[in-house]
Length: 355
Image 1 (cartoon, rainbow, N blue to C red):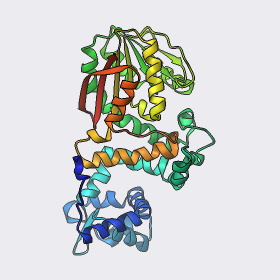
Image 2 (spheres, rainbow, N blue to C red):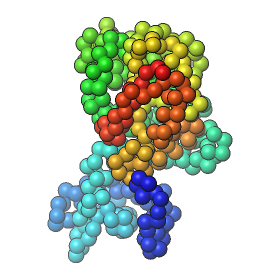
Image 3 (cartoon, helix red, strand yellow):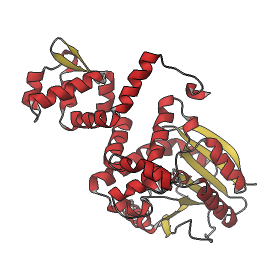
Image 4 (cartoon, helix red, strand yellow):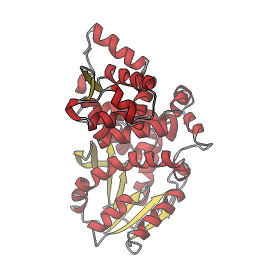
């Protein structure tokens, strides 16, 4: 099995060490947040290969020597830093915590969106609803309230969402250009990033965003700023509550959209599109599948992120195994004409048509 999930990989000593990391994970996570926020890792990084001692750090960081030394000891235990004589030096893990954009957006998303809410994970799994969302407000799903989240939480949510999609757009677009679409429906177009990006590269193509009213309002403002109002329009719609869609498009695009729904809802949306689309139109789905990642760390990140969907987003969705999407597409009357992996940071593109 891919990633070695079909066998034990640890010795007993390694296993008990991993168990302790899990047992103290929430505490250690907050220590890392402190190490970053207070600049301790930054100053260690700035000191280079020679490192920096506790006395020098105390002069630079607005914490007591007690607090700094405590955080440094945690960082040593986590192999974030290492120590030579009396000087602390940044390790490879510390380097990625400071300088790797993917790690940064994941860390901020976990802290600002998920951390407090995850206390209610078990309740969410038992009830099948986003019980952790109560941290931010009283709604059934997170999506209508994205624009009203606290500023830092909103920034972290959109940074997380856009980081992965933005890196996939440039490598996905050539596959879309080959289909020569005249009119694209961007389903779940969010803030309009894909619509704006594709409009700039497909000058003969009209684009219509279909999303919730709150997202359409934001997208329209971004479209106006991009001076693309003559090329991109928006339709406010909840795809779970409508039976009819206009059918002007010859390409229906969904990027990181269907993973926001349960399998039953995915089939419902796909059947809705199937009923309303032209027979020769394409459906293009770009999403993240945990079984298609090149490394086990990628699969871990997606499965961990799926807990966000369970606890905060809507209580019943996740990043799926690719076979699940194939089953949903088949049930909704589609077949996959082309299946492309390795786009951006682990995206896959499914180009589909009616059976």
